[in-house]
Structures are given as structure tokens and as C-alpha cells.
Length: 150
Image (cartoon, rainbow, N blue to C red; front, side, top):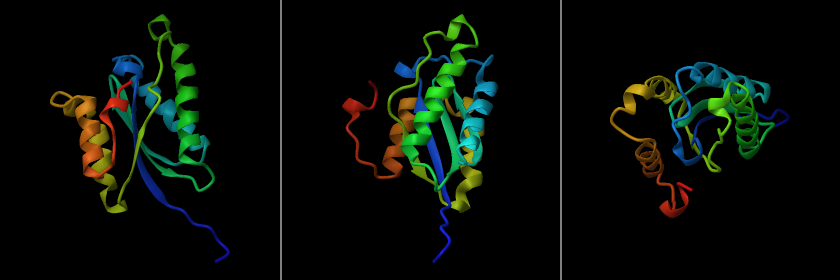
């Protein structure tokens, strides 16, 4: 087969360092757009970027030209540097070291989009930690909780 085709929908999530609630209303929409722009520049088509006070969700199509780890490295480093330029209240902004990345069935894209859009409502009932553990269990991912939250 002479043509290489890869079409992998990913739902990626990660939090601020120590889950600090630093993503406030003053910055969130601009941050989500900025992260979407980083994804787009790396040819990882962003479908939806959102989140809540202490974490981010990215729904994208991973480019066949970039490794997932490189995408996350670029998103985190560039967005962290960018947000620090937005005011003194963000000077100590950092992302956590890890992340979660989960494959998405193309038939469920609309479900994931709605999930990301409704983060504020969703997190009235569930913390990021509870949400993340639920993802890990849904995907039968092996994990050691001692290393999830540092």
C-alpha cells in the first residue's frame, strides 16, 4: 500500500500542577483556543478543547507525523509559557508531568464533545481525580495511584 493513512481520535486530559485551580474565567477561553492552535500547527486536528479550573481536555486527531509524547510536550511547554505572560496571577502556572490519553470511537465523537463542553456542570459533582480514575477504570488501564497525583 503506497499511501499511509492514520485516523486516530484521542481524548487527552491533564491537570495543573498539584491540581491548583489556576484556569479561571478570565483566561480559560483564550487558553483553550491557544492549545487548539498548538494542536493545529502540529497537524493534530483539534476537534474540541476545554476543561475546568484545574485541568484540560483535548479531543483531536493525532497526526501520523508526530508522536503523542511530542504533542503533549509541545502543548504543555508552549501553553505554560504563554499563560505566564497573561499576568502576575499566572507566574507560578505549571502543568502536571503526566497525562491520560484515551482512544475514541468515531461514533462517539459527539458524546465526547458534549462531555468537554459541560465540564463546569460535570465538576459540580465530581473532582478531577474522581473523573480521571473513572477514565482509567473505563479503559481497564493499569495504574498505581501512588504515582498519579504528584
